[in-house]
Length: 291
Image (cartoon, rainbow, N blue to C red; front, side, top):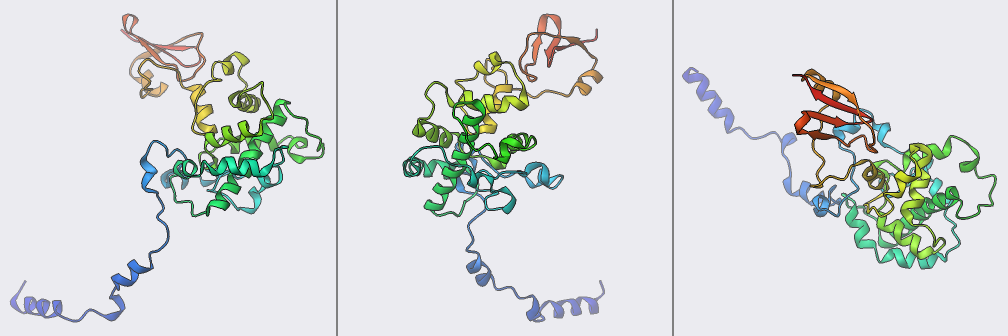
């Protein structure tokens, strides 16, 4: 750079900044009063209901949003998802349910990754309504209670119940399982079945597993309904950790042959047998390395 250019650059560096680009830092920080998106406890073990990452949602947002009914706070208030508010009668004193759920408020808030922004009364009301809607579905479908509203479209229109089942297994459409358990025990409408059994019977219409399969999981503990169903597909391992599994295509490229395998309940039940140099897995298949 020649001397004249350097001098001009130095002079320009001391020129006043145009007022159009001056940023009032104090004003910006003082106006930032909205609650933070993530709670401080979002990374804790108790936090189990989170938003779908934007990197996934932007590919197909509709795949992660409920179609029929909103459960929990993330999609609450959307006009086309208010079905839960119309199906909450279960024969129990509402105030008794509200009192029971009020004791869970801290656990409920801690289950969500975001600051929900609801007052206590509104949050408890939402949880009671949504939880009773789920339990009502379970009880009617299982035949544990008699439902007299024969014109209810949920049970008369063949496409609605399958859509609701799909909605109830969306990550953003969950309530804590402890809420459902508390409502179930407080209502005391059914004493000869556990909540897991009713949930499995409800979702079996879509998953179609034998009764013996579900019976093995009646004692499962879960964080929400999606977690409950997920755990029935995860095999119990000695170390409690489900390792990473390569795709069948990549295994085949590495010289592994596929052979039938029987007597497995889970598509994730994958085992490596060292003496035979085999990976035995998924839906009656095993893999054997080429020599």
